[in-house]
Length: 184
Image (cartoon, rainbow, N blue to C red):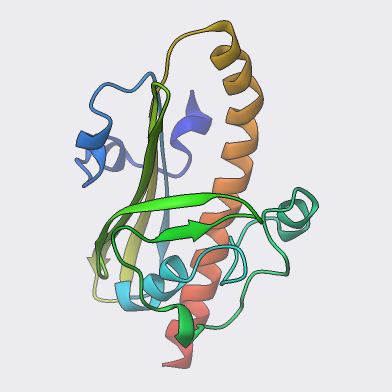
């Protein structure tokens, strides 16, 4: 399905990313990507400050706010107070839980993920320089879950929403990173 790999080249899809081994045999996987006219250091700040009461999710803010994932619009500037992210931290999403941080490789990758009741998942972001002032931002989700009717129904509902929101997030980060790069 093309939506599962929106914006991704065949190289992006087959590329081994740092979190892939966390979920070695997924029954759901998506790789999405954007080309950004900026260096990795212009992309990185937006990723590390993601989250509720932080930088936001850079997607459709009105939907994120409607469902309680955000409390305000996504940031349009780098927030110095949220530029540190470490393995073991949790990126908050909404008033409840969040995304556990599994790996931070500064300027290169962030891997989020968890394991709960036989449901194992990762969401990783890779930053790959493609030229002097160009970068690929790749988002990959891998899920291994019991193939029950509840899981299949959930994926029927979740997959289109995840596609729309992730696509918009990648575009939102691209816009912000390119604006930051132009400022110098």
